[in-house]
Image 1 (tube, one colour):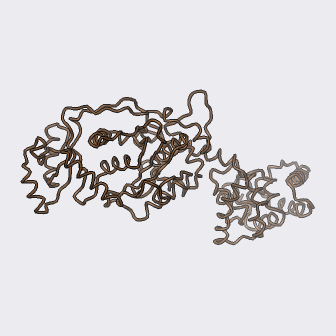
Image 2: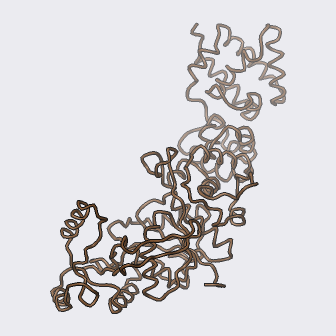
Length: 502
């Protein structure tokens, strides 16, 4: 393997959504391959046809590409090692399975499901680790079943699976890049099924065959696959192949340090996409679930290029990584703060246009959809939104008339003379030649001072009438962006709707 070009892979099953743990596995494989100027491959493992979901394959690849993880080889992109879908490689698995049968490393098993379950329950009752009892192990492999009986079953068409014979009294050892030396006793390893009764290989068998034939140098996958390693290594030994280097990633944990599960929150990448998280924030967040740059680095926000430059498997820890949504939210805000107005406009303009299809605006469409107007909204709301879509959804008053007014704020901020004062101040706003934040502020202070009032006496009612809510950016700058015509219309309309309740 020395001197070979690095090749890594992500091999999901098309059973539905992309788990955030799967995204991390794909990302680490991608980062390592790119760091080493190697090749990143996507292979679809669909040998369990009962769990296959229509359209899941394309959705998985689409989600990965949304995250910026573009494969060099895949079912969509092609390559020199295809097919990249396991159900299209059945003849390959059949060939190698026959080789194992001929070399007495595998055998036919005709045990029924009921027999297997009965044996399993008996072993559990006896306090033993459940394993296949080798009832169908042939005589030539140390068992008790004559070859004639096996041939008879095959001729009769009795359903069967093909199992691997695990050698007795051996130790299976390997060096994990993350965990160091790992050792298994063969007494703990079951005679795993290689080929199922439906003619499809199991994950363990197909994965080893494909990893070798597709020339992968490194297998980077989740910790849950660690117990499978001895089975895979035995297959490499049976075939006389050199195994790739292996790294098992730490588990993802809930805040209470239980294994990450849907019971405590979303685990599908698509769920976070629908909520409005950006690919930059999600990739940055997932990258740091187990990896860090090392001591001395205080950097927390990374671009994909920076991750490629700084990533190393040696900096991936063994301990489980806590999935902290607060951290993800913080990262999202950092990206919003640093993103250019042009990039943000490219995201929010289609959202706004979609809203305008559903809802009428009294503001000129050509103005509120212009880059100049949206840039002003962005600069006012950058520090206040948590997601890009909130430049529209959370800030709807920049485009649409308020549907209602914050009732609690009205009760708190309205006095007996508020509407009268507002009517008088409307006349002053109307007379302003330049409707700027500075002029609006100066006019308001000049208006309230002779009355012995503070500006806040009208600031809050003005905000409520103009936006419908009691919070937001600088009132004066907000009014300037909305424009004189819109502000006057909203104040007059609001005065008619709101009266002092005493």
